[in-house]
Image: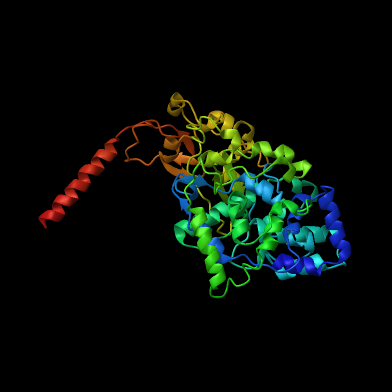
Length: 481
């Protein structure tokens, strides 16, 4: 709605400037391309159809996927994002070093505020008295707020997004596709585990199912998108075609739509029979001709097994869990793929103090920086992510690096046991006296003692034994009374 209104209100000269930047891969074109998803008329997503798709979604502690056609596992992946939206899926991660940039809007638009409403932002986009770079930056912030990281909590843009679009010549260097998918993954997880509304660009879910289940085109009387204009992302045609389906999403479902949803229900649960002439699933729906030439080199990274970043949200990309979607993974041994990706410790965007999320997710940033060796077909986890067993008996040390290039030293212990051995002190672990140390990790990390770093080794301390006996005494006394 917001972007449709924005595009309809822009002057023709500015629209021409935007289209020229997209066609010539100019500054900011990686995000501006998403404006071509906007149809010629207002459309809304069908919540009834989306709900039918989401009933198949499963999320466990280690895996998340759609269970379709019996026991088949499928999911939206970087490959789908690349082909459906034409967003770059590799590049610099969208993870901020400062989440409290209070002067950001003043630097860009001379607006002294920490929140800018989308109405105000749209007015800046349409203000012909401003220079074109200011207006382009306002458009980019609209795109990030409405498509990359959309949510139902308000119609405001945050200053924290500015650092990723302030320098127009650097906008194309970011992995916007990975950010869009990370935010959608987070939204689906919250929907499944906390019964919340789905945050994220849910049109990706629609595009995923229509790409992999061609029978959906027949059910909704949509012509295959092969005839669409090639200067638009693949998803644009589907959004325009499904507009009439979502027109009544606020009303009671009608009989015609209910019949279509019943057919969708049957299609998605039809058993996969490899001997059948017509199979419900199209496992490999994409080909090179569907992508603009400047994105061809990104295809090789569609199977990367790594964390995906969108601001303070970090989610795992696990193509090996849905390996049948990738022809390149046929016959590949995937047993140990992703073995170094532990549960990611979420950091909330709260408080008045500035937070360096890049430093908090330091280990995950290192994994992203090494995506060349993290493709599922030749997975080679980084050495610092999987330390040798004897390394667990060495004192962990930290190497402080510049903010713009954070890397762990070779001696950093990132093993799961090491992380759980004590209590957080910044990014280090401190032992708590009187507690039993896990047997798999007998030497704790360093602890703070009056400003000095010391090592401490123990299995069961005297204090711990005394605490146990004191607890037993208290129980005896309570029983006696």
